[in-house]
Image (cartoon, rainbow, N blue to C red; front, top):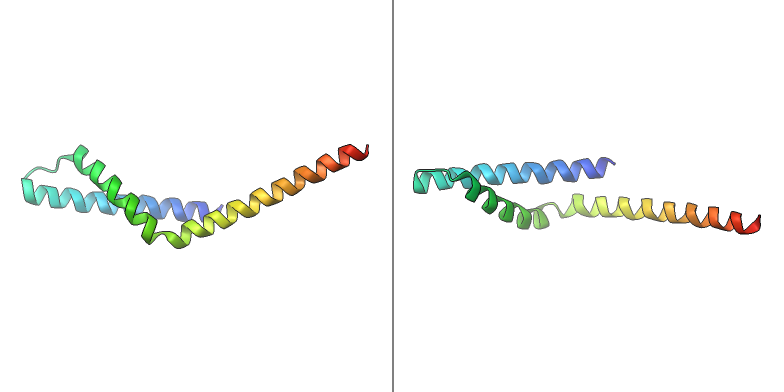
Length: 86
């Protein structure tokens, strides 16, 4: 569960920082911040950036999910085999 929160909060922080930067640049260049346009641009930039920057936390989350799925599958197979014996 820790890996989920680390990755989620890092992704959110990266998005907010990117949005602030893009809005600031837009305000300096055009004189107006255009919040909807900068939101979309920041979404795209942070998405690509998170793929590169957040590789470690994303892989840790994937390992944790895979471990958990393996344990759930093993429990399911154990319950299924115990039903077959009865």
